[in-house]
Length: 94
Picture 1 (cartoon, helix red, strand yellow):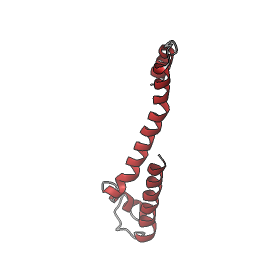
Picture 2: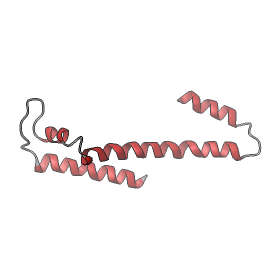
Picture 3: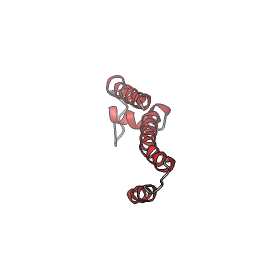
Picture 4: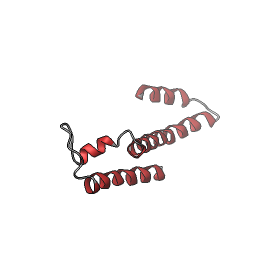
């Protein structure tokens, strides 16, 4: 999880540096020009996709790490009485 957040922050700061320092005078288009126009132009490229992908993977990993121990604890105990209320409360939140 720490690696995903680190990659997300590093690529986001790299994009900020590229857009506001190196491409301040990005070719003017009527809707967007300057740094924001440059950020929108690199969005489909891998450098623009990596921060969004890392954020999504970190979110899914955090969600999996929070939910899986609850199920493991509920189904490994000898008495499974806490399992149905736990499952119903988790399904209700979905």
